[in-house]
Image (cartoon, rainbow, N blue to C red; front, top):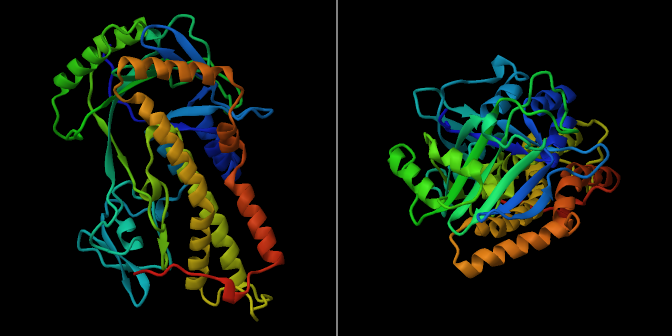
Length: 421
């Protein structure tokens, strides 16, 4: 059975924590729709085991990383949003301003919409980002191709080793790139709630990355040439599972990696961007979905806080940073969102770049140096970065800020605002 094209998301423990805070039912539905990963098994192309890297938060009970198809994740979230909240088949051409208020313009003949708040979750080629960074029609900070392309697909889990441990994802490094595979579905009736491993279902996933100087045309590429390159790239790799997968691979899609440059701001006068629109990062971070979830949680909490202060009849407005209008409340929440989120996201982006470099082409010295570094990492206890990532959650930072802000509001003369240029 040939491998088919895949689109998969990994939701790390910090991302799952956001879903659990949002709604226990949504959390359970998403968690139980995916495959819980307890660890990553790192190996070398010549067949040596290098490291076992944990994929849980280490708490009691533990939260595991969950692999879930992007469509299934969408379906789980969509189940909890009323139909009336959607405007299907309408493409946004631009977000502009009219009397300092955001206006959404559509590609068809639909009437423009004026809004108190526009949130752009429209990906790496965000239309909304243009308005945030100063030009409604031109992207002043376009995404850049980082030189890496991914291919992958779904396969029967019967191709995995007969003694495949529950919760394992195998990742192999070599001179010509990177290869990963593992189960991605659970057996029926396995309600694990991401707190334990589970029996694998009948589907697994594989993916490979390679380095190239030019991004491929994702709509028009030579599928057979990509397959030949895949087989050539991994020829001689010792893992028999990899050899069986690439021998019968069928590739429908290619996935060039596009990175959002560091932006000067994520908001401007009633417009905010989240997720990849604000900070598309390398897949090696394993944090794309989780960081988008954190963005939305932080922004929602701050909007609720500042809007509550605006509408509160008992608010002391004398010399205090109490929003006089809804627009001001939105701007203050957006500014604090950027202030609180940017440092954490930057740490993740920087770490992802370091990990992403291990997937590039290497000479013999660089290859074995990579193996040595990964072997040493595997001998160490959970590193401070991973521990902080999974356990020092932004929700706690926001709760602390809100509590302190309610007790000691910042005087008006100490506030700053980032204005739209």
